[in-house]
Image (cartoon, rainbow, N blue to C red; front, top):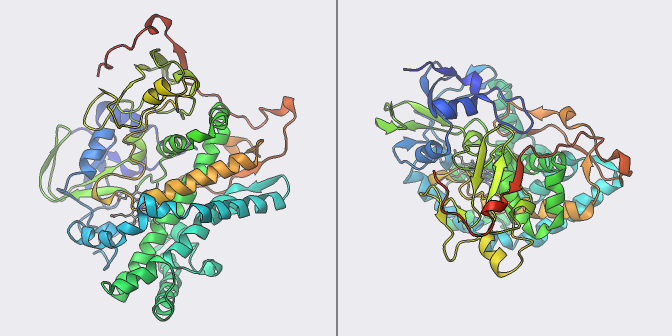
Amino acid sequence: MSEAISYEDAWARIDKFDPPAIFDELRKGRPLARMVYPDGHVGWIATSHELVRQVLGDPRFSHDMQIGHCPVTIGGSPIPQFPAEPGMFIHMDPPDQARYRRLLTKEFTVRGVSQLAPAVEAVAAEQIAEMRAQGNTADFLETFAQPLILKVLAPLIGLDYSQRDRFAEAPAVTHDPSIDLQTLMDTMQPVVEFVHETLARKKSTPGDDIISRLIKTGELSDEELANFTLLLLFAGYETTEGALATGTFALLHHTEQLAALRGDLTKIDDAVEEILRYVTVNQYMIFRTALEDVELGGESVRKGETVTVSLPAANRDPAKFDCPAQLDLDPSSAGHPFVKINRTCSTGVKQSRTPGHRTVPGFRSAPVGPGRRSWFRQSRTSDLRSPGLDRDTTGHVAFGYGVHQCMGQNLARLVLRIGLRSLLDAFPDLRLAVPADEIPLRTKQNVFSVKSLPVSWQPLLPHAATATGSHRSGCSRRPNTRQARKPTSIRSS
Ligand code: HEM
């Protein structure tokens, strides 16, 4: 058995955008490596895109916290194994998980969620007005990202936004590994009371919200209803806030990429996918436990052993994404559909791919088929100069994978798209108000984010354009003119 790493090595993030460097080392040599957990359990950690999806998609791996070993601590101590509470289906396996999840499916369809667009736009406009009211600078996290998601999510669930002081702090506190168990319980108790109060109110006066609709089904007990409510709040708030805040931070830091997006804001949907891949905020707490012996990545995972799957590591896997450490929103290098793009990543690894051939699940690389969304096809039939964003983000795992894949992803996408677009429309000179390395980070939280994000929108004097230490992409790409006449064959694997 090769040497085991400690959970602390996997938990040692220091960078504002990059996951711990150890993930790159592991992925190269031991994509499934032994890891010692806080409770002394010797389990595993998976860091390649392929293995992460394999574990999350395999019913022989369970999400049951009663048998799982948590890869993080709370208040410096291991998190004990515990049975899932009724309705807390994120910690259950099918068929129980599927039965509960089905009750919420229709709340989060693309169509249903798109009806929230006007409300999201209205809230974004309110928060932009609030930012302007503060002068030329504001904390983006507090003034835009947090209220945007909470003002949308709370009424959707059925929680009274005006009483947010009673519930809004809890998700961040409970996901903070530095707090002790007592603080956790003291934080949770009033939130649980508030939720039960809300349930009682909704029973007598139903509204147009998820809690009221769930009550109407008559299928859930009060305890289950309360846990559904907590799950939606805890899974939806901090994650979306974190993705919006860190995604905006990444955009404002990578000024070339920001300019590329500003050049064509109709590409916002693709940009959001790339931002989600790049920032992958769910950083530590995704793990599964083997229900039987499983052969995985050339290793034998024994029944009862826990495998932590690193979503940030999977989304930075060069076998899946070209130049994965680069935020890549720049359509300029993809402007010629018959040009093979050569890229030299800042890591020194040279990769190339041929536009018109993209990786699809299950294949290393394949021609784009009819009916698939394709910037290549668009570029041939419509506008050669604006073929879409360069990165193929298909298959990123920022929302997880398999039966537990994020229920709220359509809502998260809507909020990110409208939030970013409204912001860029409103503030042509938006930038970081302090150097990027001075932005305080929440590196130890299970959901990565910033502690604050001061931004400014005062029009810039020309010579001051680089004052906040903005960063140019390290991924140099140049068209290879010798390849320019016709598409080359499928990329070799
Ligand atoms: C950018 C924002 C978001 C990110 C990055 C994100 C990420 C994730 C991930 C990685 C999982 C899988 C967890 C696992 O496999 O252990 C998950 C599950 C889940 N998410 Fe999200 N999420 C986001 C927003 C939301 C929103 C807005 C909601 C709803 C209001 C939501 C509700 C859920 C629920 C209910 C689950 C559990 C699904 C199940 O176990 O079947 N999420 N999310």
